[in-house]
Image (cartoon, rainbow, N blue to C red; front, side, top):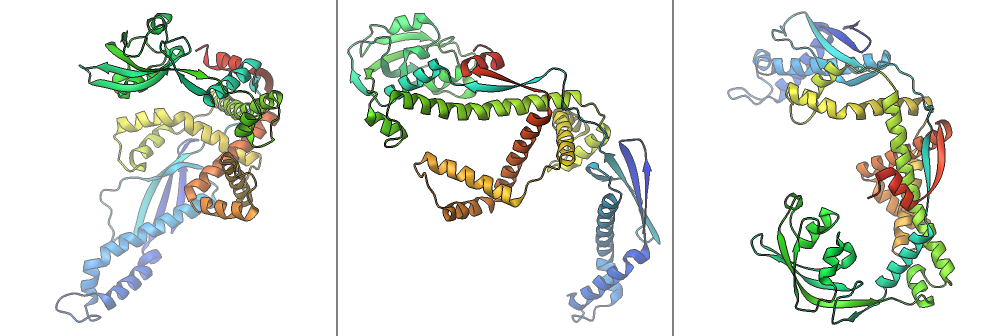
Amino acid sequence: MNITRENIDALNAVVKVDIAKEDYSGKVEKILTDYRKTANIPGFRKGHVPMGMVKKQYGKAVLVDEVNKLLQDALNKYLTEEKLDVLGNPLPKAQDNLDWDAELLSFEFELGLAPEFEVNLSPKKAIIDYNITAGDKMIDDQILNVQKQYGKLIASDVVSKDSEITGVFKNEEREIENTVTLTLDKFKGKATEKKFIGAKVGDVITLKTKGLYADDHELMHALKVSHDDIHGLDIEVTFTITEINERELAELNQELFDKLFGEGVATSIEDVKEKIKEDAEKQFKQQSEQKLLNDVTEHLVENTKFDLPATFLQKWMQTAGEKELTEAEAQEEYAKSEKSLRYQLIEGKLITENNIKVSMDDIKDHAKQMIKAQMAQFGQMNPTDKELEDIAARVLSNQDEARRISEQIISQKLLALYKEKANIKTKDITYEDFVKEVYGDK
């Protein structure tokens, strides 16, 4: 067997594999001999079928199978020994008139080669790492929400600004009829609020759906219509009031504090505010870290310049999936996935150059911490090591779950690398201002 490579350019190559008859003939002969021992052909006793007949019936299929095995093994060994970093898989060149009886069989494979490039983690303009804090207003609003949640409902005769109103949305033509409980602050305009103030049980209020809620998804749930039907919906609906309640706020006392955090954990309103702030900022940290990871990723993709073997990759995509793609479909798929592919190459280079690794112990420890946090949400604050070990073992027996955890750890280690080596500037900001700055004032 002989393997040679012709480099077309820096990103494309053709590998030629020559396989001589002696490379596979012995194995083929042995397999056919074994077939002969077990072949069950009418007119012949088992083990006494003429070898010529066995070869005629099975010879070509066995030959093709053995040659394909040789090709696969030879290519894998060659790519490893030559330390070739290839994208996708080798693509066999079409051979319409291959003579399988020839003394020498030649096969050619196209390769797409990974590009050489350098990664610069330090842009001139610093990337912001947001340190999101819970402001006083957010904490006060959360306390008010808790008081409402644990408060009690008191029936009322008329609708006021803070009423909880139960009723039925209806439109006969569209077959809409849905019972909901709502509060007036959910509506987009003050004009809608005015229609409700002073209304009584049994009153029917006519509303236009266009602009009724700031978010179409709120309207979708209120009317119980499909996602496809809700956008641009401009009809009249009636709302028949069936119940009006006022919510009496729960008292901020030790009984409520114990319900919220466990007995004796918080003993004053200051403790409650501190717990709410602490819990909120844990969630904000996850959000800010994801934002930083996204921003660094965007920077790396936009500023790390290299070419890709686009034509090869599009050709490979045509046959790589479960469904074969047309040339046009493959081009479209490549356009969608190019950015992701670029980041995978950049990420791979950073992982290799910075010796980032994930051990089985890392995965197990991460799983145990994740399980411990989940158990705490259900009041199980002190699970034993054996409980955590047993649950982690069950979780990690699922390969997809183990892979997902491994990817999370890699992301965490990359984030630590970015914070250490990239041009990062920390910015303290309240959650409200973070939302305005990052997502716009919505």
